Image (spheres, one colour):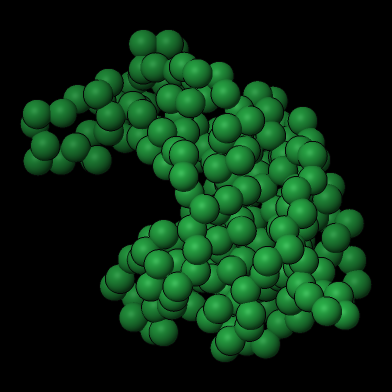
Length: 241
């Protein structure tokens, strides 16, 4: 595996929701667009409708938005490692993306830096880029793929690392953590509940906590795969937004 200084890796996770609380609240144009998308998703599933699966819209950057980005950086001291967390969250997606992009641009100055997420190459990284483009925010160089050769892209993905070249399998973060003996602090909600917690319960703080727990797990899984000791010292920082 690629050997990267641990302090040069930004571990991250994002939480996304549909652009509106329900299908009925979409404009006619967006209803038609979602119906076309849903038609592909519902092929050979006549018992379901576009309205019925609108809760899944949040996983598509064209139909969803980001409500939380949580990050973690490992600080290596003389005696132990420390994971420092920070989150960007809020109802104003443009602002939280701008704040995140500004942080990434500042953090990436100097020695080569890396981004790490679970299934990040298929979901988190492209979703972030697409939503930044929607809001006319310059995509940070660390996220950008344009003009780069594969070995010049500093993106790490714990799911991809676990595949060891087997591209036909999908392994969830929770399953991988359990397999590797990494404690999973998920004791509240799961990804399927984020939309309801956001739109109905309006409990953004609960989503931030859930997102940060994912970042902790990603970092611990990465350490385990590198043969490193797990981190016991985790510092929580106040969220932006």
